[in-house]
Length: 99
Image 1 (tube, rainbow, N blue to C red):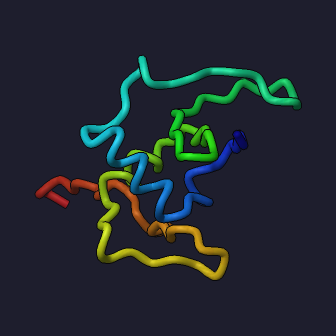
Image 2: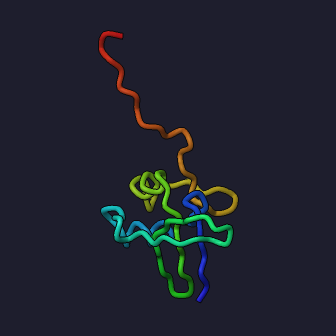
Image 3: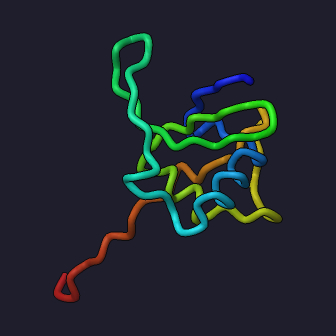
């Protein structure tokens, strides 16, 4: 069985779908796996298994955004087949009424 560590930016639609199916309400602290990579950097990831591969998807603040905004019927894919995440997404700034 292959084991692949992948960043949220490089998720293929089928892996993102498996991720949203496994964690429909989002993942919690108990779902996160922590390990050191070959550069001795600590990695936090959630695990997704397919028939032939174990994916460790790196946890990032935008992973949750990607999961909650993933629509199985309406998403963009780049030339490499990765789901495109809106790079301009930021939390809205609430302005004071007096300004």
